[in-house]
Image 1 (tube, rainbow, N blue to C red):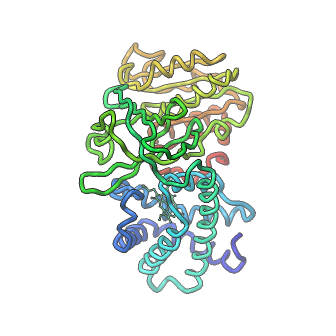
Image 2 (image 1 turned 135 degrees about the vertical axis):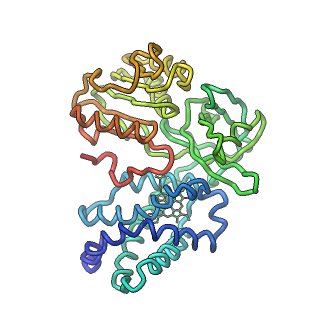
Length: 395
Ligand code: HEM
């Protein structure tokens, strides 16, 4: 809990720190990577650094955390912490890293705020940093302890590769050594690490698809201008890469804790991946709940994993698949998702996965249609720019 001494200082300086994140962040990372270039090898994504989204996500989450604990003195923003801790664990972030991040982050704050940073302000923000760090370290430790092995990544061999839509590939891997495998839950992802042309190892995360227990299967949309996905596209059966243990807290129990009421799955493009894992799991459980899967895509051809998804939904006792496709006459409806087609009730839950603008639109329409914000869940591929909204606590 934040001390009474720090509380007024944080209250008074929160807007300043929030307003300076964009200038503090580049100073922080420049110093961090200059002094610890090893962090760019297998841990931080070089592409995210170039884009600048993740950099803001890390530093920007600290004032978000501060604001939360000012308003809710007796609790922590569990959802935010959990998402970050799972992401950290998939990358192998360890306790020792927090001292390093602290050092360069606070050096950057000191440079940026110059004389405006009094010892009192520095001390209060140091307290906030360590409250957040300790909370993350604790969750991360629990996650590491629950794995079947104590390695961050293990070697896996590609056993099957298939193009499932133009520029979308479906990969199946099997362990290349005897590292015990942690079972994955539907909705989780794995970290994938490849060695780029200049020798630097670069990580990404991909949602797991249904597979046999000893396998890891995921689908990747290839970005021809990207650093990692073209390398994955070039993999051949028999090639070996590193995969992390499975992580991610967007699992069925979290997105749909209610055992009644319809569950809507809104997906677009490759965002279908975690929904396929959910439907597959629900089908294997013989779950009789009403599941309405709503998919948006360009056309039947561009829709990845379509047949497998349709078959899984068909095998549910009460499942429906409804498509909204841009290509005229190809889907159940033309164009974008139209929420007025559905009979949403306050008992419904919804899960969304796809591009951020897609999820923003779906979310607004769901809220407008009367669905409580706490029943709306999502998975973001890449850094979560919605971080400031605790997912189960919104609106
Ligand atoms: C990602 C916060 C410490 C390495 C993130 C994200 C946040 C965050 C909000 C984005 C999560 C997402 O939505 O995907 C924090 C906070 C920290 C902290 C508040 C300290 C209190 C660390 C440490 C390390 C680290 C100590 C390693 C030395 C990373 C990496 C990513 C990440 C590698 C993914 C970035 C990418 O690949 O683009 N962190 N973090 N973080 N964090 Fe941390």
